Length: 135
Image (tube, rainbow, N blue to C red; front, side):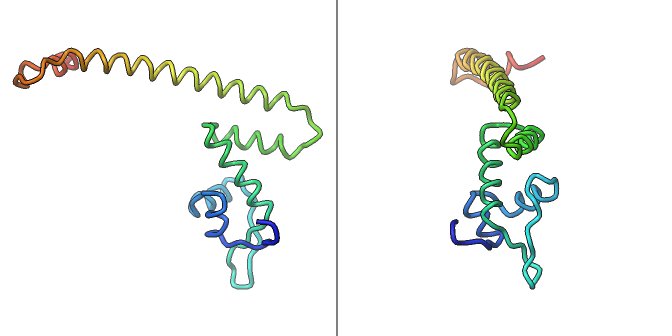
């Protein structure tokens, strides 16, 4: 991206793995600053857009909600500030991931239990899975 100061929305999307619709959405909600416009009124993105959008993508890939992304961006824009708030946000997300993993493990165990109830080869009226799922 160095040396390229003007990118189209398609080039920005390609550089960051982000769809143009998502880029426009991030602009609308203030996550990504509005770009300059060309004489033909096309969006023109620079290296800072690439850096910021790459950061947003990475944070979103880690499962953080948009409001946390917004908070992290605000904190990142203050380089002299202590990083304790970011640490707290990461720990909060880690706890949320642990909770989801526990939920998925319980779900897996229940599905495994259901799968082992099936005798197979019988009529639907005798299906243990349907029976177990019925109220």
